[in-house]
Length: 369
Ligand SMILES: [Zn+2]
Ligand SMILES: [Zn+2]
Image (tube, rainbow, N blue to C red; front, top):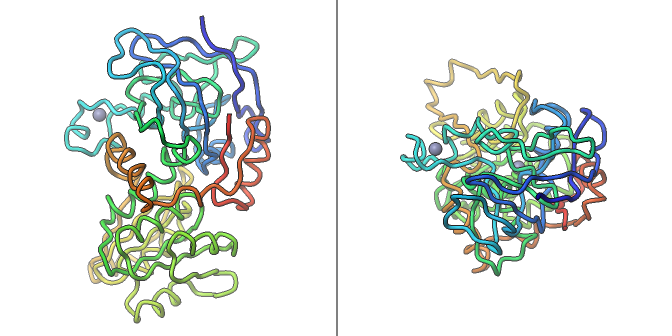
């Protein structure tokens, strides 16, 4: 047995994605099959199509979604048919030293689950019977996905699926970078370079943490408008406002920001975030650069100014417990998810969704199944 359904596939780099009928195996031991209800179109999916993230092709895209369990494999405990799930794009083993220390986004099993379930099985095939890879081992831009049980996060069944989907990557990554990694403090000043899907959530993470000044930086005015909805108090468009570092200093009494975030993934803007950070402040890199990208820091300033440079992946915390907490925050009106979705698409419109993402017209676009 197995499942047949549509999936968004990347076969050729820099070409439009295709929507194909694929076959997905029923769950093996310690696996579960999810029927998707909504999937976000995240910038990392675009990065797979242009090889910024050099994943093997052909690949079923998608790593940010919400769906329901339709079948559980042998040995699965704690999950049943009908459970509402957000797939976690890192399989969290719960046993390795990092998991034991609560840093589950650094789980040693991460690398085992890049293109399929972490047990090494490959449950997807195209119409010609050829094996397909799956983004982050979950490939959720598809009607059905079979994944390892360690990729599952069970959530409140009453959460609307389109909103919940976004918590699975963008919201967790952005809010977590502010709250878990930078540990933004009440009354502080923050600058966020890049107001895309993740950047907007860094901004709302800073707002939730009580930051007083939140400066959004982006080349697209529309994104700066979105940024204000999520809590930005000031905006800078480098193409019209000029020098970012100088402007940030101007807006922070000449000091620089207490916390600076880079959510684009370019060496140049990573250095810009560092330079916009005040003495003794914290600079966090969240954007995903090309594998060969370098960032050149003014080395002599590092000891003199005592700035911290941190990296952050997937919110630097424990998604299995953090994601249900973020959904509670939403239910209590303290986290904005409705405002994130500015466009929805059917799976057949996937190529347009990617095109819109590249053009930056949406806060977030979501595929509904
Ligand atoms: Zn682990
Ligand atoms: Zn993502």
